[in-house]
Length: 629
Image 1 (tube, helix red, strand yellow):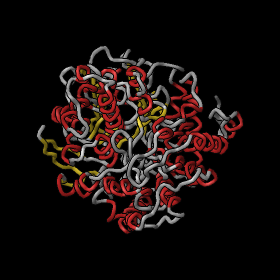
Image 2: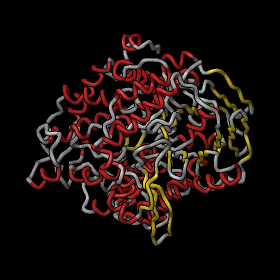
Image 3: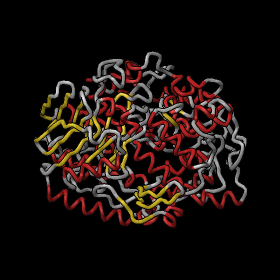
Image 4: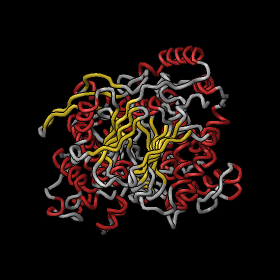
């Protein structure tokens, strides 16, 4: 028996309408543990090389970890994986809520979906009963509306994930939604589900998960909850959640503003966590078994209408807010709601809208193509652009490709301000004065995503003489110069980036949220003990889990090399704006990153990784991690 696991893999072929169940492979468990480990291994082994992301043979994979569903702190994470339509390479995403928990309770650690249904359909998983059902009545409807309707049809105890209009129309950055505000986004996973004619997946599970020592796990779980509540960050983090970082980012010159033209705005106080608490919030909202609920459920009131919405999170505040110069917290929340209904990832959506507004401002997109006289900071303009993207109408059909490929079609010099790496739009941290954060974005396996690396705090500490405990507000009032980061000290920057790249996504392997560790400082020993009481196996967090995370990093790099014909160093370059334009305002005024610094950082990073000068893992590196090209 595989303790800590449900013990089965579910395979669904939509083309042939066949459903198979097989024992979970022991080799997967022993060498990849779960979650992100399972999905990376399966995608590399089972996806046909160079298959188009929208080809029926492209796999859509769902996996949970050994701690998922065990009533431990924040053990409700679900991991998804596919070949990304946004980048053409490796893509994965994870989501909180309650969906993956019920998948394990239904008896499945891994679900692998391939093929394409002939008609709009949804998948029903009710313990041992699996059905592919018609979904014509739901097609064309918004994500949260469909979730509500399906719960009325099937029962409140079903957990439902859905796609919106953007997924149906294969927008390259379409997401999947669940629990009225949880999303798996970034890499276009909703578009892949839409390409398979799947509108939703509904699951109900009532089985138990075998663990080695139930009493020991219960005791350690209670100790872990108590430890979370005692952490200094517990009371500081929960009230505002991720939105609490908004002012800090603005003060250090890292808040994306006007399509990353600059990194500071004058209205941060109007769009921060406190503004959410004052203007929007009705209640806190957490995922399964979470002691620090970061979700804020509230009501947005705008001239375009009212909307209940979870959020906005920091990324949404920065990218649909300051990046589009939208300075009204109600407006940002409403745009968040529109993205949720349409099934658009708010990070990429905010960057694409900012790109579209700059193209329109420069005359690269006409009023006729846009469909209106679009303006910065105007909610009606932003919502209009979001809707034409999801519907692929007018210029929205081009913008639906993402900024990299949209720039190729729009032309002029629009590629100069298309903010992406590898085709994936940059998220909410402007990094022209943060070499470590910049390098983390550049080398992330899925494209520009902070979820793979976050070392901005170290970059800021470097800027103020290594004082990690310095109060940024005090430093600014004292005239601190945040433009003083010299040529990156590669010996310091690269190890920090590598550690973060291995650490930050490691929790996706276990099936837990990283915020208990990252934000409130829960010690890694708790994860080691919880894993032991669940599985009966000892795991050292640093020598076992982080080494596996490193192995997955190499595996995903090889996937990108296999799938993208000319993949290599140039795919790790930052947006042209960051190297060619100096920041015009704010704490980092006058700063930009020079390409020679970028090249030197990449040289040092590749050498530390065991990759060649083009950024490809060497044979020696692959053999050291028991991988084959």
